[in-house]
Amino acid sequence: MKIGLCYDLRDAYLQMGYGEEETAEFDRLSTIEAIEGALQRLGHATDRIGHARQLTARLTAGDHWDLVFNIAEGLHGIGREAQVPCLLDLYGIPYTFSDPLVMALSLHKGMTKRVLRDGGLPTPGFALIETLDDLDRLDLPFPLFAKPVAEGTGKGIDGGSVLRTRDELRRRCALLLERYRQAVLVERYLPGREFTVGIAGTGPRAEVLGTIEVVLRDDAEPGGYGYVNKERCEELVEYRLARRDDPAVLAAETTALAAWRLMGCRDAGRIDLRADEHGVPQLMELNPLAGLHPEHSDLPMICTAVGVSYDTLINRIVTSACERLDVLPDVQEVIGREGVGAAQPGLAASGA
Image (cartoon, rainbow, N blue to C red; front, side):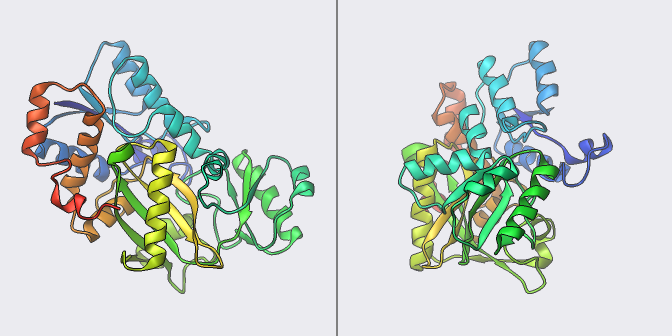
């Protein structure tokens, strides 16, 4: 199968003058090389496309692929993660991971929480602050937590994100509104354990791969898994493989899988939860476009911890995409020889 790769390369944007934080969600060259290497080892031909504008040029030139492996984050706007899926839908080219609706919805944390809440799933009480006047109508108990409504990689989260007074809340919201030029999500602060659940598959075929507990070290920024802690995770964060005989872990995985299916996420991704004061895991964020660096990204780290190889993860993503598509018989045969799907031992055994 001929598979194109869409991505945003961090070094390329840095060379164009963008800053470290602006490009924090973009991928290293080593991630692209790892994905491409895995695809080639699985018998596929690969073609590096690049970001959305490069994809646009290739599409108008008449290029076509059997499948596009899309990890492009986009640069501008709340719908930026939906840009590549929109273009590929326009040209009728299949791709990995979620569709434009899910990509745009999940990036807006407030809209996501409304869907989760309407679906009866646990998520902390919240409010959207678009102007400082909105704070006058806020009716949530302190302590509170504030973050930009549509950023990833912990942007806007640091040691000052936990707020205990109205003065702290107002100062923090003013800072975030000015810096990120978007609404601020204010929600009840969750003081308990933090979990990241890895999921593979789509709809009823989706299953939990495993869960890690995120534990901040003593010298980490307090309050949450924020930007600095993520950028310096090797020294500031401890990742513990969570055991499914732990009731809190089982609750987190059950809730995460229900949220994945409710939102219509596809192929693979990650869901973040944190426990409230009663120990009940609450949904914080959904990431249907999780990082795929084999050593530094949470989803591959989960897979490594449970004995699922990187190649198996990439194969599982491609297989999940192909299950949704009319693929050619020879592609079916290639995938079959790789042993993916329901009979794949490492993944089936770890499903929730």
